[in-house]
Image 1 (cartoon, rainbow, N blue to C red):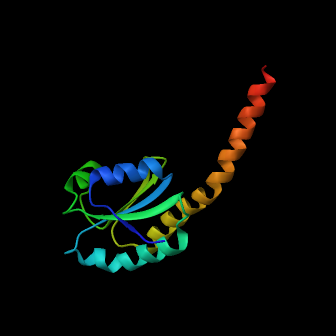
Image 2: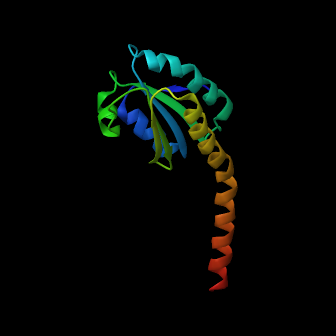
Length: 132
């Protein structure tokens, strides 16, 4: 799956509202370490994304400064991992092993998420009917 290029804060807000799990890269075109880590992010996006559940996105901090401000970015590259619209984890700097672990952890949750939701729904329905 390809990486979504975020061009506005509204586009990002819409993405995390609609997608349960999102990995986000903050970068800039002039940033050498960003260029060094980007191929790893792309590789993880290709191998770990889950259609409609886990998406990889990126934005240029110079192009979307309001999003950079909201996320409190002080240095780049920076990575943020969202679960159901909430920031669950972040990582700063070009650290491929740490990035891989964070991306894999969220992929595992995304893959298990569908089963967990249906199990919870079934349990809730059974529990509710027992009180009737």
